[in-house]
Amino acid sequence: MKHGSKTIRLALGVLFVSSLAVVWTLPNVCRAADPTEIVVGTPINRTGIHAPFGIYMGWGYTTLVADINNKGGIYMSKYKKKLPVRLVLYDDESTPEKAVQAVQRLILKDKVHALFSTGDPMNVIPCAMTAEKEGVPMSAAGMPIQAFLRAKPTGGWKWVWDLFFDELEMARQQFLTVSGMPSNKKVALFTNNTPDGIIQGNLWKKNAPEMGYTIVVDNNFPVGTNDFGDMVRKAKEADADIMISQMHTPDAIVLWKQMRSLGYKPKAAFFEKGGEPVEWWQANGQAAQGTMAAGYWHPSLPYPGAKELKERFEKERSLTYSQHIADWYTAGRVMMDAIERAGSLDAAAINAAMAQTGKTYEVGPVKYNQEHVFALPVFMTQWQNGEVEIVYPQKLATAKLIYPLP
Image (cartoon, rainbow, N blue to C red; front, side):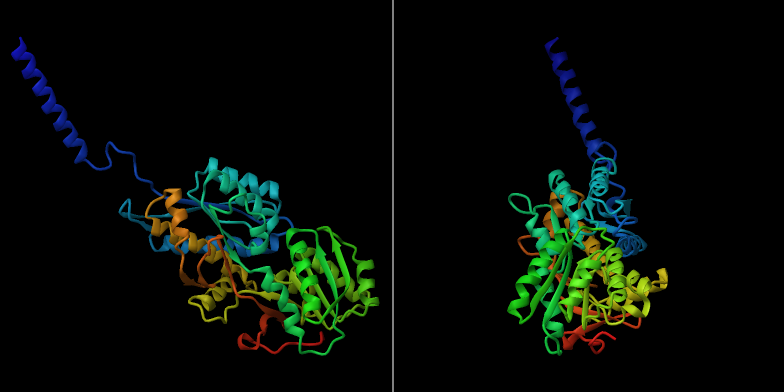
């Protein structure tokens, strides 16, 4: 009996080893199935106060994903094949609450492997906090760097990366642009109560005296203000030759019309954020001639694909381009490149690959620092006959500065 039991045990052992051999030689049968797609997503400003920017945001992301899928997807070394990318977009209605709800849905329901970002600090910051909490890598654009750094969680940003302009540099461009022009050096400020308005307003107040200017009127107001009459009268009475503002596009349009109706005509008018998208020119027409906004990208810059990106947008959308097509398109591509370098869909591997970013994109060279930010160089742009031209510094200029306002 003992001999027979030993024989049976030996036979069972041979059978077990043979079974393992069969399993090991049949790939994709008994192990977890490989992923079939890469899922990325973000809330975007389809409606609400930021909708003028949502046009460029949505186009940048969808165009990027289409470009990738038209080439067969992204090669993933772990799976030894290319995977297509599926992009999931939700309208955040330009509100923080809707933006956070969308990110939570993307993470918990759609199971995204990575996140892009919506725009404006009020929406991006709470979304970034959600990504941090859940450990999902996120590539942000449209998020001014100082606002991003000031909102960092304890220990700093770990999962979120920001690509945009630095307010410390941006808030000097207005003074530098008109520094050689005749004026009384008096400045009227109009800033809203958002993080952008507060941070940039404080920087303008700090920079003005250092650069020989005096802030004679300092107006701060809530988003959605539609009566700027008293503020405009103060600026006119103070005889401020330079007007600098930071506000959303709908509010900026109202302010500019009221300035004209009340006869306040500064020699230079800077409408940061509000005067940047094409809606600004569409609403004001030739009355917007000579108004300015700081820039960080232009199709004339010597970056691969820069000119073509502008041409594609205008052909496909029949609209004047915005510089935002470049930063949102690039922020998405940076993440896609990181996923390819990671070679898998492991969140930690993708996040580590983001830190290795070092390449020239349509928006220029991108390399994040230890604080997870990369600042794009800043210059000054001006609306001239329906086109956005660089007017400062001279080495980048595509047109001569119009001064004073016509």
